[in-house]
Image (tube, rainbow, N blue to C red; front, side, top):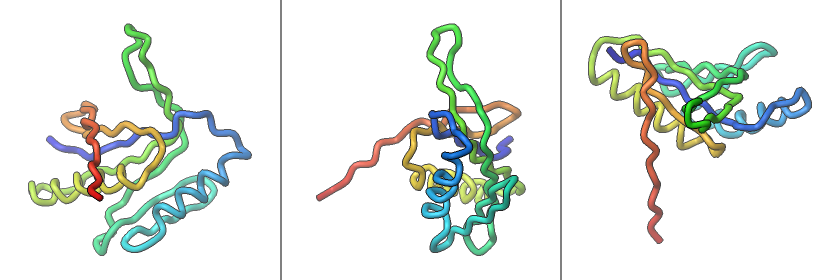
Length: 131
């Protein structure tokens, strides 16, 4: 059963001096149009659309990859949105929010679908631009 999604991003360490710069960057990406970023000293929440779908943003260190192959990436920012619904159409709208969020973030990132208490990596897609 679909439970939501997560996006790991920003693969450099975040110092206290760098944090305001990162918060400013997030504000420029997620504080216009249908996006609204709300923050205080302890947490950042992004709301999207007229039904205000919620995305929690946290500064935490997470590792992703195979330790056996020594191909481990360390990320320092996590975007997470939990799905509350039962219709497949609502699920598709929530998954589309994930894709829109991924497109807004310019840092290196890895997204996951949360399904049946497991993290399933979202395949990376390449955008083709036409002239």
